[in-house]
Image (cartoon, rainbow, N blue to C red; front, side, top):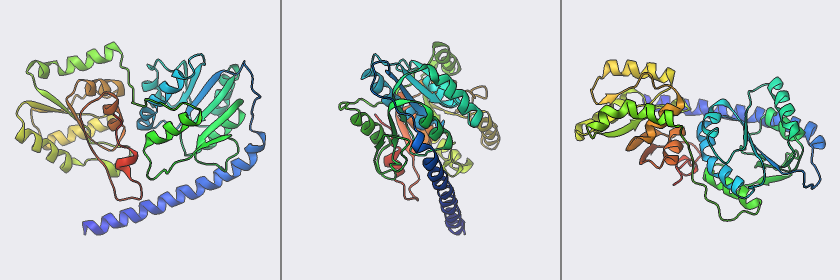
Length: 340
């Protein structure tokens, strides 16, 4: 019976993806016809030296995977001002990066798009790069009306708002491949694309304070994340409990710390009522992203489904066990494998 429900669920999900992709293609086609003839390109000029990178989907894991790309882009254009547009989540990670000269958070909606265009008028771009293969109306409008010598996007070669296109196999190639291809398109061949996250001192200290009791006892810290961006990738209670029990039954010198945002913490609290163990810890006050990242920095091992924490752990060079779904056409364990 469980297999029947699983198969039915997969059918529904596939149909939903097809519906989303169908309407997305229609939007792209209409906007392409309207905007391509008026996309603003500038002639080569010494005044145009700024670079604009758009990371507007605000997917945290994707944003982390782009940190090495941003660093290499700045390294090869040290005299250029690197400007990044992103969402509020990515801003928390990007705001500490030395490679970015200026960063703007962009909300969804037409008014926000107009405000962003106004902010960008003071820059003189030689290069605009959109770092997602999923084109939204906001990305297309910004790409059209921001003047630049060259405009690059992933795939979508039919969209003539852009001048250059980075091609790859989206269901097979690693996320890093597309960034490497972009840099090679620009003539930069030897690229170090390892991820990068920089924490502030007070964030590090807060994490140390939370873990100090266990560190003093020389306990190994295992971070367990049960939650992913898509619910079907989550570890449910039974899976989480089995992981906790297995580790604690075999290891006496460890503590397991479960991560979660505010909503996740409520779920974890209910789970702990069903299975309480002194070595399974949930810090209820640790709901902020950067504090949870600081906890990961202090740990010995991370266990997580395929989600942003895979890339965060990789950026912090932590030992990692990650679980991938392979019941779709995407080769997730290759595309989203941690780098480094």
